[in-house]
Length: 301
Image (cartoon, rainbow, N blue to C red; front, side, top):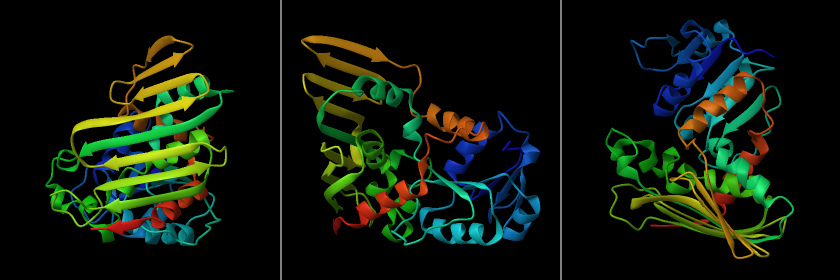
């Protein structure tokens, strides 16, 4: 189905990133925003009936995480046979729900990083034993606005590093199989003025019998994001900041670099939707499993 019109629920920073990419492919008049904000440069409303009248081919749920569930319920009520993109994470808490009227995609955009494509090629047919994924950054530098007022700072709004950086959980399952065993913990340990978790650690075993360890925080002023993969006679180090893969195999080290970085994945992701290439996307059940894994971990403040 050709996508000619896009309806977007929410008009925060992530919605604006997607709109920037969409405007390279579609005319601005083909975008409709549902938001309580005023004086937008797009057609907009705060009423779902106006979105129904617009009749978009693609609906994007880009509201705050704790609103995703009620937005999905409305979409299921008023629409059918649409492509519905939900910004990650799917929900702020696990919900037992199986929507059936639309085709749901969830925005784990790290899947579209060219490095991930290269990793798949490198590990194909290789026995992998152990993997570490990590993402460490500093929340006050994420946005231009005061971090203390952002949803990330509030547990009941779907904030916290486990949900905010759940890309790493999705990437682990995307590359190495669904978790069959999973244990983890969330903590608030820094002096950041938030009530959500700022540190998340987990260890699990996937269906491919690979041990996977994940370490996330957003109190680190030295930004780090990457992965270490250890297999039979191979060690791989991935740096998403430098866009670099280092492979050590049989005492031979090779280094690969990609021209794209994480910021580029938003446009790649949008282009895939608009061209109806949907196979690589995180589906609804995969995203729901991430919510379930996070909810299974303990929270300590």
